[in-house]
Length: 514
Image (cartoon, rainbow, N blue to C red; front, side):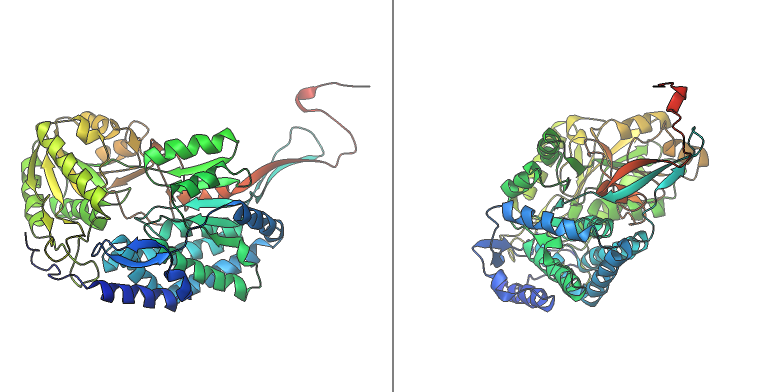
């Protein structure tokens, strides 16, 4: 099938994409020699190599250097640590276009989403700089006269960040900006699918460290595959492992870290739903659904995968969505006008086709999309029109997360049933309700409502701001990153009792006179 109106009709050549990637990386300060290693980096734009990188063989030296850096970095006053993060934010601003180009070429994001991801990096730096003067403890009332009870927060130790391809730099920045102001060095193991973007971001943070006279070992980059991530999870010198990826990955990482009594921060899968009620503004609803379901080609953990619509409006909603899905511009993510770029690779394509096949076998009807496009222009890339599937109800495929643009639409009769359907899946990341009924909105937000970590009203499930804590419950892992008080994950708490009374009264009136 040819691409639709507004989509790119041709895909750039391998040489053109390679040159753009190399130019962007070198502009950020990446040594050209680091772009010519033995492990090929494939672009989802054309399915061809952008270059190659060297992988790390052993984590021992990296962790040792990080631990040595920790002993010095934790002594630096937090506002001075914040100055380094402030400079990183300035460098990210200066190189926003170059980093955005690399995100598009390695992850397949359209230009506006790629630039938006870099803006998240800039925003979290601003947020973290403010936190560098607000790492507050609290003073509590002691039951003993002449005593003061308080808590203090201290740097935790080495933090390992294991990030996924779909947000190749933003998730690293969420963790790193906060970890740095909290006094922790960071070891970053990015996805093996997006190492060029990681090299560029690492070059910028190294520049910020150097300008402030800080050892480069405070931030280290470790390129490699899953075995490298497992080695970091197992290493007793790593205090916190922050891992983003599939639930399957989290089932491996969590127990590994727990076995050695380390800490883990897990951001895993999502099977996110939007409830659409009879009172919903359908114009607004359709816009919210399409961005959440088709944005990033369905490859966000917060992607909308289920629409739970009241029977009275489900037909009209499907009709509207079908019309929009039919004209979504699919094509080269770097071209103007494109809204849906490629899937990351062949495995994602296969998973999407299998999910659609299973949905039909379970009584569903594919009412729009699912076709491969631009195959003649880029036979090694995978451009798929987002699929809209009408389902008769809850079936096994609806409860499974497929990391591709597949949206299931299910009917409901009663709002309590809609909430139950929202909560019926193993994951608990993001959810939303479209309604103009305040009682429905408040119920959805209440303890009796959505069981997700992110619960929205009249917006979609994706597009979270950095000011709020990001994360979910159940098989999503329970971790929280970015805003609110997520900084506490990167620190250790100490409870302090100070006796200035000159006597020694015991708590709870215990008498231990000698």
